[in-house]
Image 1 (cartoon, helix red, strand yellow):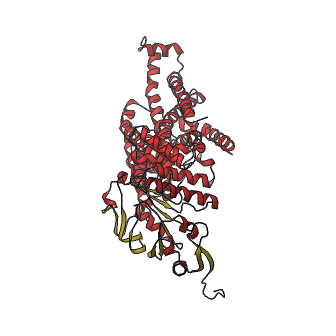
Image 2 (cartoon, helix red, strand yellow; image 1 turned 45 degrees about the horizontal axis):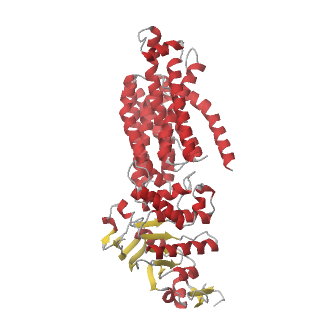
Image 3 (cartoon, chains in turn brown, cyan; image 1 turned 90 degrees about the horizontal axis):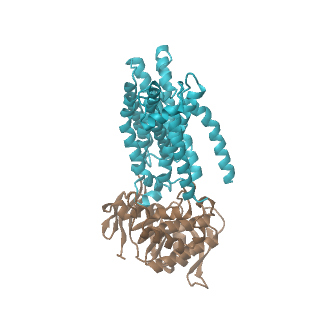
Length: 269
Length: 333
């Protein structure tokens, strides 16, 4: 597989009337799981969307293999970069297999049925997400956790070298959260793909991330390994949270115990 | 039953119905013709008798009914997909009201009387309204989103509708000519009018088939579609264009015929799923059968005169539609 390298140079993100990030420069480490953390509204989702061209860059560049994203035809780009948005919509009456097959869109030719290659990719993605027994079910009937596995299978069927996941664990119970993250990391290791995701749970992020980026008010506050990022000082600066950080006795990754938030005027400290 | 099998079965059934309604449409009408004349006509034994002539005169009407029904069915399927509104109908973007306004102005100010002149006016009205609605919906953040399209369309419909009344009501002559167009009938079809509308239908239908796989990705949400390499704005624009051309051309000739475009794709989607590569061709077939069937019923219940297809469609369609929706919803619970 050709190695694809993604980096951001002086990237400005946001919308016409509201700039969210002024100047972000970041190199995404290839073949690793990168997790973006930060408080609500700090611009991590917008940054994620700008990185995969869902939102236009207002300034600066997103460079894929040193070429700006806009230099790639969209179908070609969709074979290199995959994106699972926060709330995709389920079409009425669609089966799991059909939905996963939609991930093959960038490879399909007009009026041609699914190729041998398409079918292989779809069934592989279904196996990787362990949803073989759901394959013929209607997506409408599935639980939130099952649905999320189907969506990730769709993204995997797209067979991209770089995969973006926008809060893939939101609204899932703790078992599904662990399961999803576990599978994502396995796939990253096995296939050597680059994963970038936004997560809210610090402890799970620390366990599953190879690299972490902490954002605050649109700019990068800190980046590095979980051990470098999850510190009491960073948590205070990024989230305004006072917390105790210790080493997870099982996984030896940093683990936090939130103590309290600095609310002006409150008695707790 | 598996969706694929269900679709195959349904396709077979609707093709049989298509053949039956075609025969019935040629055979039945205010002048009764015995069945053997139809056989003779088809086998080429008799093409000159009075009965044969009567039958032949029903052919353009039949062809027009099929084309108009197919166009409205497809147009409805497109509009429901574009606006993500399961009960959208082809007129949701204000197209029909725009066409009506131009026709009524033509009758009232330009004293227009012939069908071919109606067509151009109605098409111009439909097209301009669509551009206007699309323009309004594109203002602001995010371009023409489904919600903004629906809102702009409804607002335009109401505004233009009041203009139609303003022009029409003071003048009883205008009202008299207009109401025959307004009621929705395929009875006045001739080969000439069919040829006039054919290029529009061909363009609209081809565009609809081409857009189907792209619209499928739009059903996953705009962000997902963009991630799959699709430009949601372009796909919505082209699909809306196709839907407007199809609905506009049909409305121009037959007047606004409601319900086909709402009911056919809605019911098909409930039963066969939302894959537009299936839904668009099947909406075409089903729309054709339904409109022709309504026309035939209109000829029978109005005997010896006729009741317009648009009226029959609404009268039969509404209760049937409610019954189907209720049944399917309850089953799915």
